[in-house]
Amino acid sequence: MTKIEIKHRYTGAVLFAHEAEDNTIAATLRAAVKADADLTGAYLDGANLARANLARAYLTGADLTGAYLDGGAKVVSWPRAVLQVGPIGSRNDWLVVYRTDQGLRFDAGCQRQIDRETFERRLQDAHGDRPHGQEYRAALTFIDALGEIWK
Image (tube, rainbow, N blue to C red; front, side, top):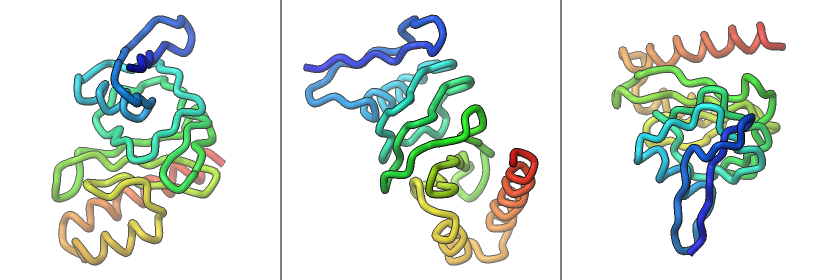
C-alpha cells in the first residue's frame, strides 16, 4: 500500500491523503475529487495528471505548473495555467482548459485533454450550430480573448 498526501503549496499542511495499492497522484486526485475535498492551494508540480478528471475539483490557487497531461503535455504559465468555464453544454458540466507546452488542452464531458482542433471538430459533429454548440463557441471566444490579454 502506498500513501500519497496532497499538501498546501505554502504551509505544507496535508489537504488530502489517499492510500491504495499501486497508488499514483492521479488516483489520489480522483479520490479527492470523489470525496469533494478542498484542494485550494495544493502543490501539484510535476504530477502526472493523465486521464485525471479535475472537473469540479476545488483547486483555487493550486500550482499545476509542471504537471503532465495525456500525451505528455506539460502544464505551463502559472498562475493562469488552468481555466474552468461552466456549467456548460449538453451535460451541464465544466469545460476545463489547460495551457501546456503543446498548446491548449480541453476537457469537456467525456473528452479528456484533447487539442483544440480535435475539440472543435468533435464539437461540430456533436452539436453543430445548435444551442450547446453555440455555448461552447462563446466559451472559446472568451478563452481566445483571455489568451490575448495574458500574452
